[in-house]
Length: 174
Length: 453
Image (cartoon, each protein chain N blue to C red):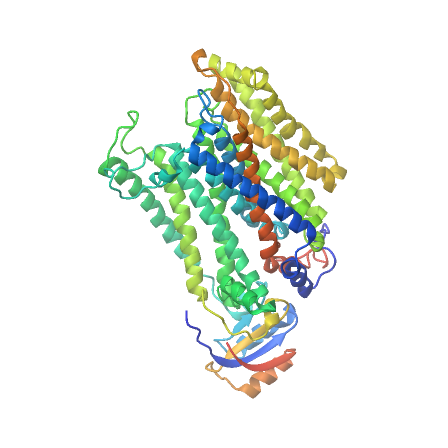
């Protein structure tokens, strides 16, 4: 996927507690398009940023249904319709024997579709995303507000970030 | 409230965690690693030659002959598939049960799963004797009729179970690695390293929205893998249980196989983790004695489960009043293959009992030796089930012995070469402890509330 960079301003924090507070305050200040960046999932960040519950489970559920149906259709059509062979006097449509196939295809479809959904939701894979600070994937935390967000004012944001304990504030693109 | 032991020793900061876990990837390999790698790689080359001979000349090189037509290939296949199960169990089942200690061992256990399943997968393919026709196992529209596969056959259930298991565990493992690859990319000092790990990280950015989706996906994959792992060994046990052969045709097989798989898998995790701890000193703070002790407790529990299964099989053989069934079990313990039965019982039931003593559970040399014995015992369990049931069935005309050849030894020993080569490469190229998962549990045992999350 071609990278599209957005200009904006980022504050960088050193501690988990401060970033949580900062994310909540940024949200209260009316920003809606900001991103909170961390090296690991921070507990309570979804609430602080007002992120809704992920929609991936719906994809999983539908894909599981499709997988199960595909398994049933495949075994039924091949064994009872297209090329019905009498195996040891068993019924052409031997449902109990087909359960393992149906089960495995249910899991396979559900798992792979969920991963596909993650890729779609996170817009990955993408080449070479901009790096605000290499330490963000190690021990630092950041909030990035894009220039097209509501009430974007560099001076005000910089002051707000400083007041919230950010040790660096920089103009960057992301 | 009970005070928890810290999950990570040494009062590490977030930066320490990244530095420690990335260290083995970023420094020059140690002499002991190189020595082990050369050994494993030589064994792998030997394995390739042996398999080449077996494919080129035919599986007559192995000891399979009338009446034992299932031999090393099937025994070792079931063995390696079983090894894989502990990885999924640690990463999926313990995740669902909110067992935070899993974070330190999950990555390596999952890697073990992936490599064990890869090693296992070769056996049924080669066991067909004409591996170049193995694509016949897959249902696809073809010009042979169209002749479809027989979905009533347990061997076909295996194809679906093992390939789904391999795919899902690989995906689960890789998804767990993505944020860590991004960490390594950001630390990279040279361009090649940066591009390779950058590509592997898929451009992961770690925003709160991404993490929210990511955590949901991880939960879903854990939820999907849990029934999957139980189904795989259940289906492998159907290869036996669905037949009418005395000694195989038992309803206890699915749970008994699953317990055995967990047992052998955890033993392999302990074997590998002891070596990882010795080879990479910095991991001793992450994979602590507490972690090892918990795994040893699981080994002891599942060891007793399989012990119960052995006893119950005997009881049912007697209680069923079926003379064939009764004969098979008496023959198993006291017939010509009686030695293998007693190797199995000693290694799987008696030796793990040493873990009742806390001192033994926490001793690295003791657990290393016990885990090796368990692995030997579990290989023999599959040997006992496969060979002793086949070698004497209903008719004395079908009585005979398995003609073990040195090609069988080569296949068995060589498969360890493949597994260890992959595993050693993994230790040098991928972070062996999940960086992103260990960080949130750093404070467990250090704060007054006993850790939250």
